[in-house]
Image (tube, rainbow over all chains, first blue to last red; front, top):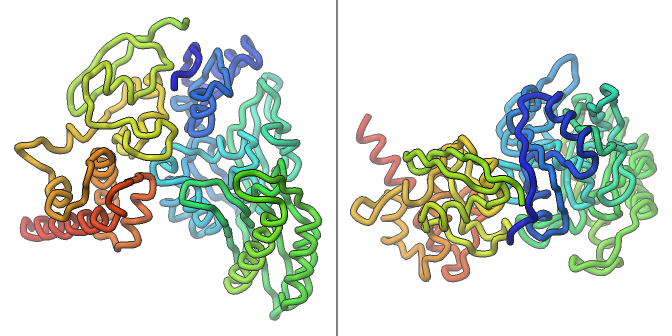
Length: 284
Length: 164
């Protein structure tokens, strides 16, 4: 499996990255961990005449938690997210989700930026970022731009990012309350048949806030505002959970593929969301 | 065709310098250019783990890295872990506990397991299974692989205690 030939660049700063993007337009792409792009290049489903490796670009790694905001540089790997004690304290859902991505070798290479910017509906981080109401930070020739994760995804592999922009970081308010990232997959390393990200807060035994997003059940991640609203003000009893599940099922639009027919995916989505709500509520 | 690049890397402690097209996959560099044939090509699609090597302290599937990305890197393959006259504890444990049958996945298994035990010297059985989930074996059913890694962990821990 030999990909088509390409010119390779390894700039040391963003100016160097942007210069190549500006010169070559959509003939150029950035490479983070490469574990989505390289397989596509090997299959020749992606041809990238100018490949810009971000590994030496300064300032793209690291996790900072300041004034209640969590910020991850785009090159932060899943392995780093799993091992970072401060991130675990501030947003434990990140570790729970990262552990369910791919396998150990892939997690040493796979990055948060690659996972969210690729626009693959199978990636886990986009739904999670929507659940956390994250902001994506982009840099382009005209300067910096912030986009809400809930506004970023347009269709499979189509996002609000322009060809000459680079996603340099994600940030989100440190979540409060209970959390769960629940994922159904056929085997370790697989993309989700259905996955749910849930954050929930409890006050006096009643649900005060709830945020719900689903993975791989449409051509984009699905933030289901109505599903969250169905839980707010309730004791998260069976009726409330079923109302949330019904709202979520109204928002998703799965297609048939080798993970199963549509009816099965809707069934799996409902089971996964019930489990995620139960676990998040038990932790709230 | 893109120009060849001047590549420098350390493989098993030895400096290597050569010209290569950036698109060359690291597994092909190792096997075909440097004649380091311990890492195997099983699936060539990031699934099986037979091509696992250690790069700058990370377990990596070398079929999913361009040689250009590994420019300047420190690479360790199974050849850098032990040799027939001086087996690594893990290699010996795989031998003792029947952790291999055909042996095709074994270089990747052992290379991954060295890193797993470095990060978690005293893993539970579940942690071994989770930590080895990127490596596929089609012979053993994994039972004896897990047994071998747990045995190697106890042996390495006992040796460490004896040394202290």
